[in-house]
Image (cartoon, rainbow over all chains, first blue to last red; front, side, top):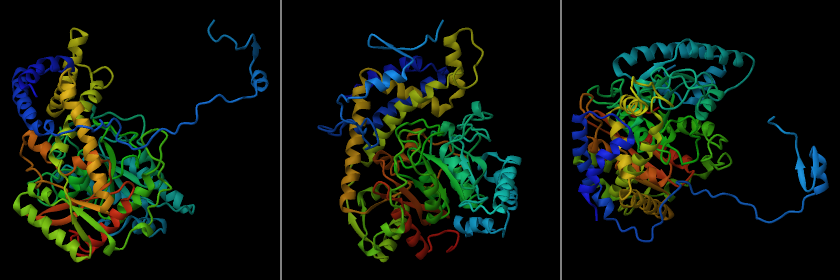
Length: 97
Length: 477
């Protein structure tokens, strides 16, 4: 169940983490507003969400994945395209002296 | 040419045929903008010589025989959407003179089609609101009754006839509520339909680029131009091939509209009566109504605010005086961050960032944030299920009349204004706000919600009903 006091006490820390200069009168106002806000959220906390997954992406689209298997390429062709090939490694010129 | 009385197709035809030049049209429009802006405070920036130069370029293209679908038409862009020619303030005085190094994809597409941006429209502090009441540049006045705000400056621009289209952002319903309060049409497209590249939104999950126009026909004409996959926005869908033609619109007699009767209980009696009248008009046109239960509207609104507060605390962290925004005088780095952020963010921005950070704290994260994400899922299910046996859903667009220009509303009252729009944002579905009546001389709008990528159906239904029952506040154009 919601612990209003604990949430409210977090305001000071939240202001610090957010790195925003807040004058004292505004901070006092924020405390009142936070209390009202948390009260306002109460119906949401009472909703039975058993079995409901969290939505992590608003889109229904999915990644199109190809089958993950080894394909036999033409190794000789690849070796020919490389500047050099030795001992199973592709050799390229150094780019940092 | 009176822009409110012609469609974009007719206006572009007049320019393409040489009946009127783009330069002449834009010059006249810019003069009107300046006059209107003094009274209504619609624009944060009005284009000058740049727009006239662009108009000349369009005229040269036409002389060479080119035909453009939006030839020389004046459009505006909300000031949280980047346009590399005019400043983009994001609703903050800290960025009043900031010129974006790039232009949003949707704006570019309109310009490629021949449209000319005549100005940037006003918005709330960092776009955090649906009323323009918190704008650091002052609220936009409602053209129907100057005691009230317009809610959306773009809607006011269209209602006054100074431009034919406005590209606007919509998170929790600013665009749709503005359209409602100004008696025009406002479309929030299906999520993924229009590129968000160049939109500075506080909410990555819900911020979208939508269109405001005087008619549904103009909206669909613009949508066809700006929609489609954009390599700069991975969330766009490949939707150019999706059907938008009128062939896909079922006969009126076959259309079933889901209407959650209980939702209307949230309204003041006078407003409810207006909506009931509008609903009867739809029924008289042969549309069938099905009562349905959207049981989570209030909780969806609360979940929406938990999510957007969390997201704005993260998205606005970059406004720190070093990455973005001017740095304040300070003795050390920590002080510089605190002072600069305190100055860049307005009262609403500070409130949202602090509350958002608090909601993401250990302990609160599970209690509030995860719960909100689960409710998001339930809300999407509710809407999707309803649209398995209904073709469209009908909801009010607004909960109240717009704010009085001089009033400073309580923050929870302001957030509660999104009651009918924010849950639709959670659903990801397309929604169209359209004129439905008037109360105390202020237009009142309805919201039609459709299946994904069904904007053509929404617009066709809306245009027909509005035309036949003369809801259209500017005459039966």
